[in-house]
Image 1 (cartoon, rainbow, N blue to C red):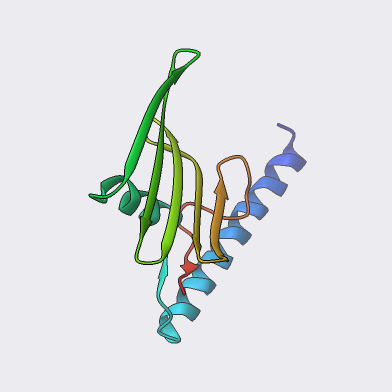
Image 2 (tube, rainbow, N blue to C red):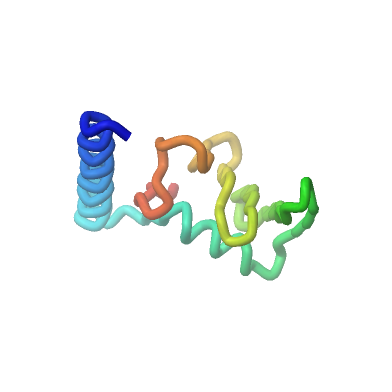
Length: 114
């Protein structure tokens, strides 16, 4: 990685952390309920009503979780402990659409809950 790329990556990472901190502070001040991708994944994996399918593909273990509860629908894909995909929606309103290969949501960024 070139020096310019390292500086650019560090600036982007710092900016994402600042955005996350600002969001979290605003949600706390406004008393808006929020969660994170990681917290949602934990909730889904440990919920008693979750449906889990496990598959072995190319020697790698994957788990697919599906949960419908309290008007919310959740879908989670993991590879061991790594969250690959998480979708959550309420009726027709999308709450989160996390993909591990995209930077839009960070695992610990606060997400506004309806």
